[in-house]
Image (cartoon, rainbow, N blue to C red):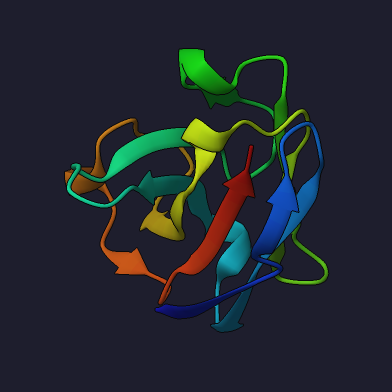
Length: 124
């Protein structure tokens, strides 16, 4: 089992960039697929991006394609979400999540370990 802690959130102007990190403690991070979800006020938590345990398979939600990049460093037990060309509609609490096994999932119900969340606010 792993525990996850996000960092790197903050306030940025539209068009700016932020990088979120998700650091895992515990054993076996390299055997977990990892994902990022986000939840805006009054909305459901939604899928953003996912990466397989080896990093070989990646998927993005349509609203972030071409702007966000998910990656992971299994030696450092850390996952990343690089966010470029940020828009006000990207404002949300961003959560990293992990699931046992290497295959990625696109639904929050497929993930059983969650971080505490990191606030990202994009001003217009």
